[in-house]
Structures are given as structure tokens and as C-alpha cells.
Image 1 (spheres, one colour):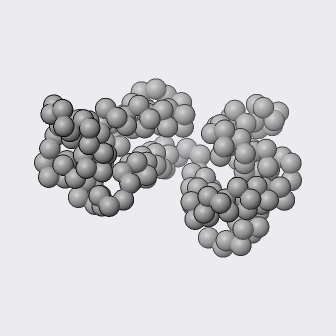
Image 2 (cartoon, helix red, strand yellow; image 1 turned 90 degrees about the vertical axis):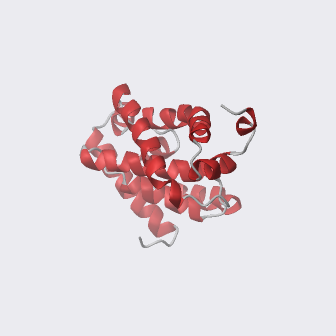
Length: 178
């Protein structure tokens, strides 16, 4: 592996990979596979599934490398690929409906960081306590519905319902219709 590649930014490495450098891909994999695996492992309970999904993420990165725009940061692009793989997995396995979390993430990303804390926190405050707890634990603490149900002494189905209702109220509070 070329030493000069190791010092390049992720964006430059991705450019090199787009032009055929396998060494650039290897460095990107070394730099990011741990974080991607951690992200996936927190969301799927089986270690083997997380490992399979990690491979799928980098395979999808390979298939989509021509779509990457090197003027944009690499990390968010990689995690959008990761999230897409995770959502596909959830749909195939008929797991928790990820659409509410995806929507919550979309709301958070559309609000500037300065506005984000105030607007989301104010919106969270209008939720009934149980909904606020479930939304916070699910989104910020990245807990499963089963973990939330145990902490709140309720069923996973009730935790899902509280989450869904909470996100719906957040949409209304933030003036979003989608």
C-alpha cells in the first residue's frame, strides 16, 4: 500500500478508488469499517447479521462508487449507504418499521445545528411523558423496542405505538406533513 495514500483525505481516496485504485478502497475500509460495524451492531442483534451487513455496505459502496461526488464529505455519504443497507435488511426481515426513525433523522438533518437543539427539545417537551421517554430512548440512546419496553415495564408493541404516536406529534409540532 502506498504511504502517500494513507495520508490522503477520505474524499481524495474515494476519487482514487473511482479511478481504479484498490489500495484506496482498502484504506477506506480500514478507516471506516469499525464505525460502520458498530453502527450496525447496535441495530441488529445477531453479530453474524452485522458482519454480513458490513460486507453488504462496502459491496454497495463499490457498486455505487460512480455516484459519489468528491466535493461532498465522504463520511455522511458512507453512512447514507449504511442506512440504506440497514433499511433494506429490516424490510426483508420484516423487522421494526424503520420509517419513523428515518423520518426523525430527516427532520433533525433539515434543521440547522443552531436551531436543532431548541426546536427539537421544545417539540419533545410537548409530548406526553411516556412518548417523550420512548422517543428519546429510541433515537438518542439507540435502544431497541424490547429494551425500552423492559425499562418502562410495558410491551414492545406498546413501545412501538408510543414511539409512532410521539413522532407523529413531533411532525405536527415542527410543522412537517411528510
